[in-house]
Length: 371
Image (cartoon, rainbow, N blue to C red; front, top):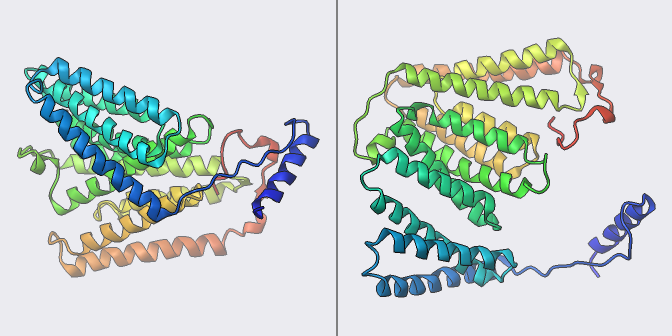
């Protein structure tokens, strides 16, 4: 018997004493395969699916140009993957069905583009966005949801590009991540979906902002030159500032401690000052937001992604040729001194002992401890 089972029995007994559960305790231990076994099964599933998909493409090569047939075959493959994934399959079948689902999505996307070839690119990519967003919510598989959310973020980015709003894409994606993570525990039913979708958006947000920093933006990959006004950049930074304020205000409201009013003003002012200082070093605000978000939710993965993105954004900014090294060193030095000054002010002028805890009953139900 494992050491975890007595703890579960004691918890079950406490729940029985409060008349919250009934019946005898039943151990539900699950034997998990080692990581190398999972990796081998995943590789086997994807490798086997390549042969199956190759066989299907060879047999249906005369029907590939028919959009209706491609759509129907893709829908059947996605439906089959959904039914298999819903019944808790083995790891081999899970990865096999993932490959089938992605192949079905590719067939549907191909059918959309060849069937509505005379439509605008915006409508075509909007249809892809709707499909991927729906699958990220419906599919009963964590990895599948992450991948569909990633594909949906790409479709959303391209849609904003054709709307001439690509300069504010990073701010919109960051607001979406903040909303999902800050509200993922409001519903236990939707928590896994919200968490998976947020990871999928973050996986695009970090490299997307990095591509704009190093000069390989979306117009480069689409082989189009579409210049935007310079004030679009400052609009993006302003929206990132609003996203940071939304994050900080939400965490203050969810705090278990009643912070003094002057402390709240210092926190808000420090947030605004930090975002204003990081306007020249693009991307640092996103790194700070992910780091704070991961720390508030005790999410080690988000913390790691925030730290990695911060290191990349700072180092890439330092080696850009728009400013001299002396000017960039001065800006980074000022930012570092500003952050250290904020820490000194919070520790020296605002004693944590003076902070009154909020009553437990006044905490909003469904919110996790933010600070």
